[in-house]
Length: 147
Length: 147
Length: 83
Length: 83
Image (cartoon, rainbow over all chains, first blue to last red; front, side, top):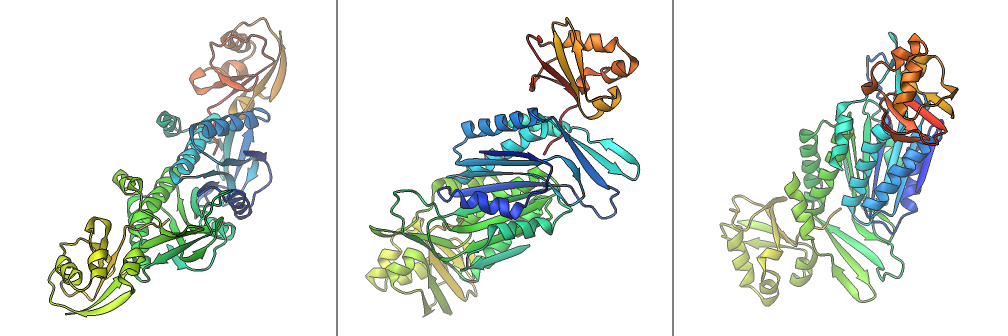
C-alpha cells in the first residue's frame, strides 16, 4: 500500500506503469484519476485544496486498509494533491491490483466513495466572481450506503 | 473513440497519460488493464491469443458505441492484443473519460464484461503439460445480466 | 450459394483448417451444420455439442436456427475468452 | 484540560484563524462548542448550524456528543470534498 499526500503534480503514466509493473501476479489493474475540469467558457481560474495534515494520511490509510480487508487485493495506491491546481490538472488517483476484475473495480469505487467524504480535503474554486468553497454533495454521502 | 487490435505490446503509462491529457474537460478517468498472471511456481510458459480479424474490430466498436449511448462519456479507448504473450505482459486495456466518476466506472465495467464474452478472442495457455484452450467462465456470461 | 466457412480455436484444430469455401443449398445455420456433420468424422466431432459452440454470420453473432439469407461468411468457434 | 483547536475551510475563514490553544473544562464536544459560541460573534456564526459541521478528536472523525476524554486536538470543519 502506498499513500501519498502531496502538493506536487504526479505523472499518471509513470504511476500507472510502475504500479502495474510491480504486480504482474495480479490479473486486473484499475486506476481512477480525478481532473480539475477545464471547460470551454468556464470562468474557473484555479482550485485550491486545503487538507488536515496528519489526519489526511491517517484517514486515507484507514480507507485503503479497509478496502484490502474487504476485497482480495494485491495492492492499493492513493495519491492526492493539495494546494493550487489549474483547470486540466490531475487532482488525485487511486489504483488497485487484484487477481480478478470485480475486486479491482469494486475496491477502486469504494476508495473513491470514501475518499470523497471521509478524507479531510476541502476544495475552493476561484472564478472571476471570487472564491467559493465547493459544497459536499448529498449524492456523495449517499454513495456510502452501497458499502 | 479509439479501438486498437494489435499484436504489439502497448505502453500503459503512455496510453493512460495520452488519454487523460486529451480529456481535460472530463473530471473522471478510469482505466482497466488485464495482465497475464505471472505466478511463482506456476507452469504457464506463454499464452497465445487468437482472434477473428474483421469481426473483432466490429464487435469492439459495437460494445464501445453501446457504452457511449448508455453513459455520459467523453471518450472510450480499447486496446486488445493477440498473438504470443508471456506471463506478466499486459493483454488489454480500456479507458473511459466522463464528467462524473459513476459513469466512468460503470462504462469501464460494462466494456470489460462484454469484451470478455462478446468479442471474438480465444486464449490458449501453454504449460509444461502442453497446450490448453481457456474455458469460458459461467460467471463471465452471468456478468452480462447486470446490464 | 457459395460461402466462406471459418473455424477458430479448438474448432479450427479439430477440423484441421481455418477456412474453406463451400457451395451449399442450406437455408439455416443448422442445415449447414448437418451438412458439415455428414462429411467426415472430424466435422461430426467438432459439431457434436452445439452448446459448446457459437456462430457468426458475416461477422455478427447469431443463433443456430438463424437463416443464412445472403450470407457470405459463416464462422464457428467456442465461447469467447477475451479481456 | 489544554486543547489544540483546529479550524479548516470556511470555518477557519469565519473564525479568522487556523488553530488556537484553549484551557477548558468541557466534558463533551458539545460543551466545547457552547463555550466557543459564547466567546464572540464570529464563533457564534461559525457554529450556528452544526448540521453543516464535522468534528474530529485527535484526527478521528466523531460526533458532537462525544466525550473529549484525554483529547489533545479537536478540529472543526465543513463536510469534506476530496477526490
